[in-house]
Every structure is written in C-alpha cells, then in structure tokens.
Length: 367
Ligand SMILES: [Zn+2]
Image (cartoon, rainbow, N blue to C red; front, side, top):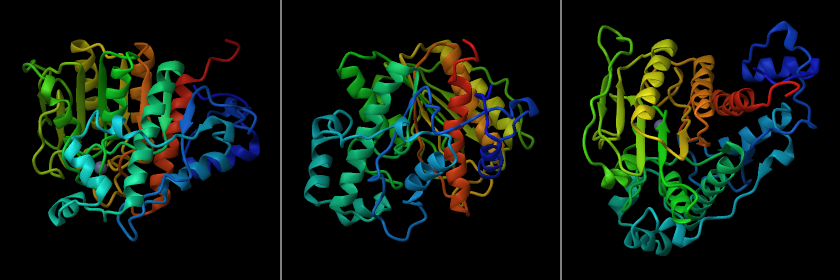
C-alpha cells in the first residue's frame, strides 16, 4: 500500500517522473519534506565514478539523489553519509596482492583492460566508499528491516581481480564485515541485475557443498523454460537471475542461477523470481538478504536483452521486499548496473526501488 497524503502538486510530479499509478482515494498521500522514510538511504555526493565518457552513467547516483529529494520521495534527513571502508574491511573479500596493486597503481595492462574502466587513485577511493556504503546499509538494514545504498552492487569483482566495471565487491565486503562483527551468521544474495553475479558466485563458492534439486515449475518462455541450476551454499546462499546470452561468458555456479532467455517480459520474469526466492528460502534461512537491484533488465537498456518495463521492474522490487518482510528477513539494497538509452529511465528505475520499499515497509495507517 502506498503511504498516505499525497499533495496534489506532488501527485502529478510523481506520476510524471516515476510512472506511479495511484488509486483515486490515495490523493491525500503526501510525500512532503516532513515525512521521513521508515528506513535510511545511504548516499554520498562523492558517489561518482571518475571514468570519463563511458556507457556506465557515472553521474546517476547524484541524479537519483536529486530526483528523490525534488519529488519529495525522500527528505534530506533520510540520507546517511558513509565513510570509505577500511583496508581491513576490503581484505575480508579480496586478496592482499590485489588490494596492494590497487593501492599502489600497479595493475597490469591486462588487468586494467579486464576492469573495463580506467584506473585512477580517485576510482579506488570511489570503490572503497561504495563498500563503506554497503557496510552501512547492512548495519541499518539489521536495525530498521531495510536500507538502501544509492550505489554499490559491484557484483563482477572477484577476490583477486576486477572486471565488468567492478573493482571491489562491496556486497561481499559488507557480508563478511557483518559476520566478523557477529551481527549475522548467514546471508542470501538476490541478484536481479541482467548480468550474472559471477564475482558473488566466486567469492562465496568456497562453502558450497552439494547440489540440491530445484523445482522448475515456472513458466516456459518463447517455447522453452529458462535453465535453472542450483548448488547448495554454506554460510552465504547466492541467487542470480540473469540473461543467459550476455556477459559474463563463463558463469561460475551460484547457489541458484536462473538463466533467462532473451526477450523475457514482466510476468514471466516475476514468476521466475518468485520461484527462485521460494526455492532458495526453502533451502536456506538467511540472517540478511542482499538485494542487487540492477536497472539493466529494462527493455531499453543498451547492455541488456530482456524486455522488462518500468512498471515490471518496480513490481520486481516490491516482490523482493514483500518476501523479505513476510519472513522477517532484513534486506539491504544496492543498485548495480543500468544503461538505459535515456539516463532518466535508469534514474527512474532506481528511484522506484526506494518508492517500492516505502510502499512495502511503511507502517499501516493508524498502526
Ligand atoms: Zn549489469
């Protein structure tokens, strides 16, 4: 249910900007600057990747922040500013040799090429900051039930190298830090970026023990069922829902991989997500859910081949939040990729994730 009291002036703006559909009787809904969200948004004005002209819209974080404030979805007091992760935190998920190369600027030409973003000390700072943001998001999620890092989700980073625009795996760093602090024992990653979470699968592969049979009762798509693969996990259970015919070419096994065919649309995608979440939560009880809310399953994405609509992506977010809330599992969110032809669409998709969380986690009226 949408929270209440929408000012008429905000109503039109929100509908135009965010594509929300409100029922008539929700016209009193007010996302005024006085209404605080029931959770924190982690954000820094330094969330910017210094990578020049690039398909990755490095300025998207600032634009999402501006959109959320200008449309009254969030109040400035809803935002918490992170500090960069410490080197000790980064080393919880990455090898000393790799961290040393990043700190001393000694990546090989091949390693920098594989990263697909130009190395600079400023870029190192940006990734340390994103990891600090995800640590903070995990802490707030455990406190409030949900928290959103307006950044992070760099799921292609491996322990000993970076690739696919991802230098440091901020989500893995956050999980390992929460475990080290004794705040959680187990975690589940739910990766809905269009690209498979290869770094996540690799980092948490060490504790995998055996394959479990998985139900495959989701819908068939374009004449065939997506391939659903599974392997049981140890202390971190990894779910990845992604386009099969896309980067990365080699997909190391997650606990559950759903290899989707090209062109899948909203309803089929949501059925498979529901299936994967149900399967995962039948096998595993996480203390923390880490939702990687990539914007690139969008039908106008330049690096994706799925066909989700803006509304479908918001329903995706709502589904994850509803499942987490129903089972009382704290959920932290990171944003990962998003390469829509129009950057405004990417900003809309990521902003809608905050709105979806507000709708699901807002206390009921008069509660
Ligand atoms: Zn992606």
